[in-house]
Length: 313
Ligand SMILES: [Zn+2]
Image 1 (cartoon, rainbow, N blue to C red):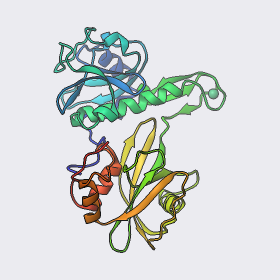
Image 2: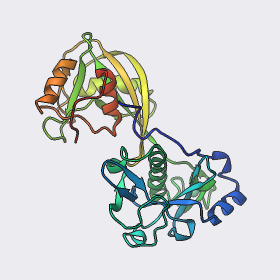
Image 3: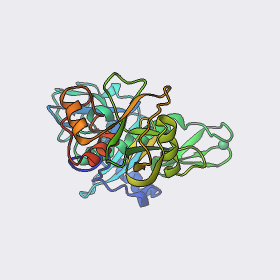
């Protein structure tokens, strides 16, 4: 909670107006000062030190072949691109030219958002989130969903067009709701997913269904998973979660009653916690919180009122 929701910072202007400017794009790609982030399977190269990490960029010339996308331009007029391509050519000892990045290879390795999302600067976290989201989409968008023909990237990698029927395809993003539910005593509903280890709890979450509002999805998911009926549903904040292509919509919801009946398939157990209950359970090690990268942790901490004195997994 110290600060806002992770992965929502931006220091590099997305420069949407430049995405169709072919002259500018060609010049920027020819400029050795332009920075390229190579993305493969949601991972990039990063220099990971003690409690901090930096992305490793290459020059356009050093970038591998692959789908290219404009991430934006910073306040110093440096253009940032992403390229979906193999990281293997840029391993330790490879042709790295990363100003500010270590050249000696110490701490240099592949990493994804989960590992380095909270270790990066605001600039790097924003660039990585954007690049991973686009890279994940391009990796599965090579063929038209209407006719099956190949598609080609357009708008500097922010859309694709079918080579046969001309249909335009945009990056897919699946909305999910995640909600902190409180009862009339301002206790918080925390649950353990059946897949999680004992003690690991979080707030409830689920996908928005077709034809459903986000607020309806909140009420439906809470009821399905715990039997709890909610009344007021209030938007709290959102987080891009490109793993592989979600947008997490955070809400606060007030419960009408307190009886819990878990659905048993998805949710193993659920219970109401006062702030004192939670503090004690965390201190004893009985409960483990979601990672600080997640909007779930942020939602819990905004209810709690401060950072939680908790180790996370
Ligand atoms: Zn088509």
